[in-house]
Every structure is written in C-alpha cells, then in structure tokens.
Length: 122
Image 1 (cartoon, one colour):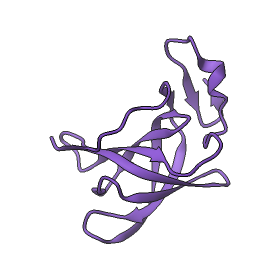
Image 2 (cartoon, rainbow, N blue to C red; image 1 turned 180 degrees about the horizontal axis):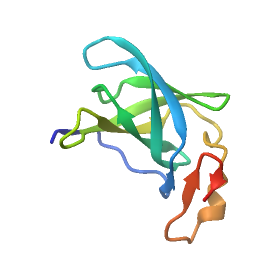
Image 3 (cartoon, helix red, strand yellow; image 1 turned 135 degrees about the horizontal axis):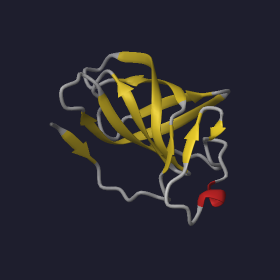
Image 4 (cartoon, one colour; image 1 turned 45 degrees about the vertical axis):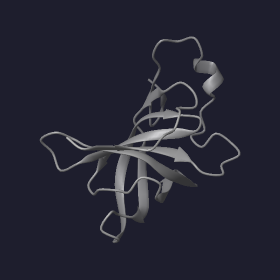
C-alpha cells in the first residue's frame, strides 16, 4: 500500500460526513479529469475524500464542487486502498475565508463523534 504525505498538521477536529462532491484537476499522469466522489470526514480547513479513481500528486491543487459552491483545495496526502483501484486523498482548503461545508463546527465541540449526512446531521 502506497501512502504519500506532505508535512502538514490537521487544523480542527474531524467530523464524519458523507457528502457528494465533484472533483476536477490534473492527475499524476498529467491528464485533466473531472469525476464524482464523496467526503469521508471534514474539518473547517480540509476534507478526506473517498472513491477517487486516479492517483493525484501531493501539493497539486484541485477544485471541489459541493452544492452551489466551488472550493479550491491542495492535495496533502494520498493512499491507494488495498485490494482496490481507488484512492483516498486528504485535502487542505486554499485561500478560503469561511468554512467550506456550510456546517457550524462549534456545535460539534466536545462530542466524541458526529456523523453528518448529505441532508444534515444523522
């Protein structure tokens, strides 16, 4: 299993959230792509995505489309899933002034685990 990681610290607590997103960028082979994926968990400054079907380069910028939002992220790590052709990727928000997911993360402080679905808190 190959894991590529850039040196970075997680900013904020992870909140489990399965939200549909569309990702657009350049893969490790230099090809432009756009595909559907989903979040696995989110923070106010980043996200972990699943169902990525191509390898991405660390430090590459990608665009996520979530609802009516267009969000810029930088790839901070990638991990090929064992026994699968899919990857998980860790992304950090780039130049975003407000929380990108439309969630109030202060509501979740002190809880051991919060699960969020596309329709809200589950």
